[in-house]
Amino acid sequence: MRRFARTLVTAALAATVVAGTAGWASADAQAAVTGPPPGAAAWRADTVSGQPPPDPARATPVEVARFFAGLDGSRARDLVRAHPLVVGNLDGAPLPLRYEANRLAVTATGEPRFASLAAPGRQILAFDPRGRGTVAEVFGALGRAAHVSVIVPGSDNDATTYDRPRAAHTGPAGMARALRSTTGESVAVIAWTGYTTPAGVGLDTARGRLARAGAVRLARFTEGLDAVGAPDPVLFCHSYGSVVCGLAARHTDATDIVAFGSPGMRADSVEGLRTGARVWAARGPSDWISDVPNVEFAGLGHGADPTSAAFGARRIDAADAAGHTGYFTPGTRSLKAFAAIATGAAR
Image (tube, rainbow, N blue to C red; front, side, top):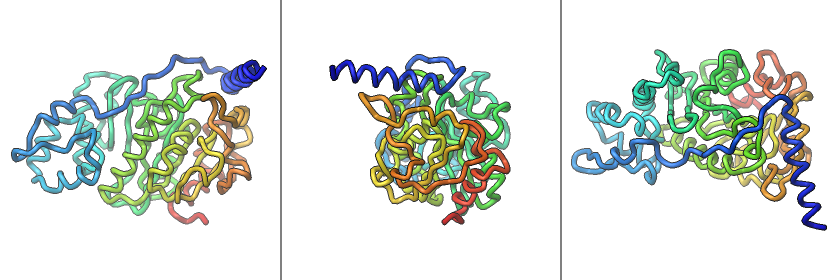
């Protein structure tokens, strides 16, 4: 009888997840991109003044920053040209070197689907062509910013879809642009599509497998920001991205974590996140995520509703946010609240 009941609960959960996303197609399981980028072996085999460079798989961002601080400009540029995929993804490396390395890495792929990332003026902080591709792009002057925000997106985002022109204000890059436009020059915003997101709606969206892999990458990414002297970030975590943030929370130095359109953060309460950050939550009245049950059972589901009183997060007014992706629409209460959090003005 217990087995039968468990089967019913699991089936109901999976069915609700799919039904709540009317019109989306189910998808195959995604293979998470993990570990150092392509080219790491050649990088390790290189030497600088007779010494090996920092191992991308083991060196901390602080150690990476220390390594580059000891190089003259010529040698650093030589490494960019010889190992663009490694330098471009090496947390702790100087920002200008990463931007240039990723421009070279994108061009070297020869793939039309990535070509726009190499356009003049784009600041690509990370790029990995494996699988569907991962990417992080900076909007604003990260090296001079008084505040930094990181957009952590949910399903169906990768290096080719995160900046869809038809998805203004709704995709990661659109959210980043909207936030920076509202906050002004003091804030740099990073659209961090740095993990393998679920594609479509299938079991990947209801499980934590991709989120766990993403949390490791997000934690290291924020450690890299710290290593280059950037301010502690605010994390804006949308949909499945809030699962990633929930799992990474205890391993980041974020000042604030904002979950919006969240199916859960793999914790029963703010205390369960084990973070010193202020935790905020928003859900619009027409967001279909409210139809997803807030349970975690047999590996499916992501736990408590972050907007519930019992969870303990600070509530954000999102009464005029439309649907699942309308939170950054200009003029909305949610975007105004997000801007106040991003600039440190929210209390």
